[in-house]
Image (tube, rainbow, N blue to C red; front, side, top):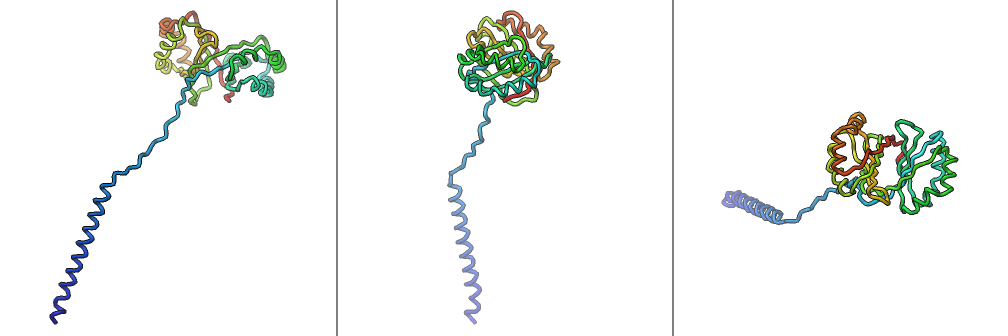
Length: 245
């Protein structure tokens, strides 16, 4: 009878001891975890910049064609000729005023080769077969700024003009960036003639043609051009991109 009366006491004592031991183990385990200072750093992938400032040689050609479809087929057929001269297809556009007036831009690995290519008799023959009419114009650009971001407008303006000083013009041009954006104009490419940094070539995208055309006539732009050292009146060629390579 004595042993049966004390059995519950022994049992509860054992249970209490077990629970106390478990609680101590849990506290110790929790303490050990809190001392673990190892952390895993999560690095977000960097967003690649769409701005290119490495100088890029570009050959620009403007000419009229008798039939765009015929000319385009001929142009594509002579791709190997361009590659042999270190030139790579970039952009083809058509004037918004005359769809048979074409502008072609190719990236050039070597400007000396590009210049030689422009006077090659084989190129002249290929142009004639493709239906080019009149005398084509060639421009050799060293692009110092390109924005490659994809935008929803295919309308571009190629503006050429002369400045007193390249650095002074570029400083003033950058300061007017927001002003152009507010007037429906986005910078795409700019640089200078390969042999003369006083001759500027600027390609912009027209996001709002009504605003852009009005801005071009504004006193605001005239004053900005004067301050940045632009000489004379700029020449503009407005076109629509029909193919980008």
